[in-house]
Image (cartoon, rainbow, N blue to C red; front, side):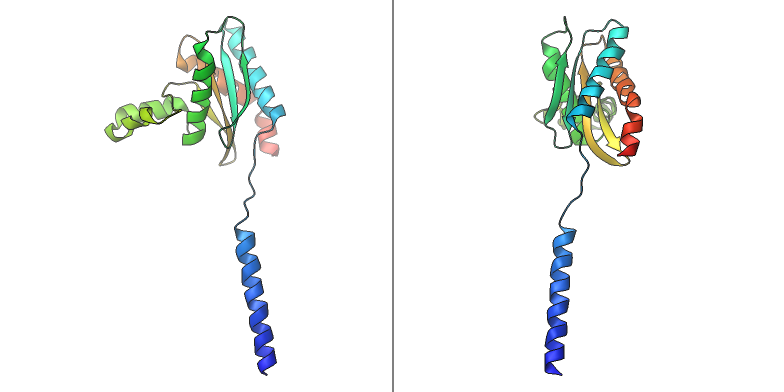
Length: 166
């Protein structure tokens, strides 16, 4: 009888231990270089159609730059602006246009502008699969952040089918 109880206790503890370990493992989606490149190309096409010279940066779920492309004649400041917009959109899981509006409307949120790497200007959009943010795209250089953001949204809409299949 004691052996059976001991055996049952060992089985339960190993079951609990393996369950705890398994629940500590994350299964996360991320953005591939191929998809990041497609997004960047679509953004450039969208902005180019409107004669905007932009830089586009796409970051993965960790905020690491996957790709940056700067069009000919895009201003030198657009490289860092596009990266910061992508980082801000990723970090907040919200389009930077909304982050900017929220920070202006809420006195307590105005300190967001002081976070290193944040840029509170429209033009950054998170990339999502369902509710999971897998990256973000940031664009700088169009004559207005809302135009940068529209190019980003256009690019995401072009790859929407790939995001659904993930």
